[in-house]
Amino acid sequence: MSFFYFPHSCSCSLWSVAAISVNRYVAICHRIHYPRIYNRYTMMIIIPSMWTICFCIDLPNLLGWGAHGFDARIMLCTYDYMKSYSYTVFFVICGFLIPLVAVLFSYTKIFLYARGVKKAMEKVTKEDGNKEMRNGIKDADRKLLRSVMTIMVVFFTMWAPYSAVVFLDFQGAWPRALYVFTVVLAHLNSCINSILYAATNRLFRQGYRRVVQLTCCMICYQLKILHKTEDVVHNSHTDNPETVSQRVSKSDVMHSSSNKNVK
Image (tube, helix red, strand yellow):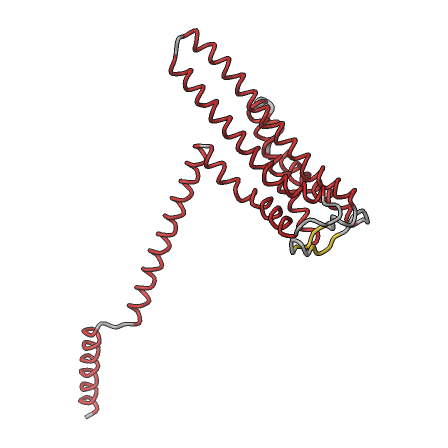
């Protein structure tokens, strides 16, 4: 199962990034059609379909075109890129290039759309003579450009080395350290996305801050309950000396009275 998991998970990771970028493209550039394309029912089709596509990308390995095996270079069970060079080309195209094209297309269209809106608003504000609004539009444009370019450059930078290595080293003669580095770099992309969103988007930073605050409050609340529970348990097992003496006195009185009654 692990032979199948690695290439499948890599493909799904990249296709998920591409799906998110297409989602943002539709939401921003075609917002009128967004509720019809992305709703509860269509998402029940889109998400399984994406995983099915990724399964089909790796399926040829199970049917004889390519193979699975243990790659000693990266110490992982994955597809054997040395078994069939034609399948390696197929995997790079379907697993990397197509998602990359989707990401580039989506974010480029988003940026061009934002530029068009910005120019239209600049024209209006220029006629109105509102300098502050024009400056605000330019700042928003720069922030959008920075965010879009950062996401695209990081995505390409972290996945391109691994794709280039498996695509070009068809004889398996390149150093093992290079393979390990490119695999680790590629998988770090999924970890660094959340940091990129926070670094380039104020709303994400506010959301992360809110999550951290709620988490800290929940931890403090749980610790407070735990402390109270420990106090109750401790008090239940530890008697007060005065209470003990009172219990002893009452016991002595009852014992003496019972002896008198017997006499």
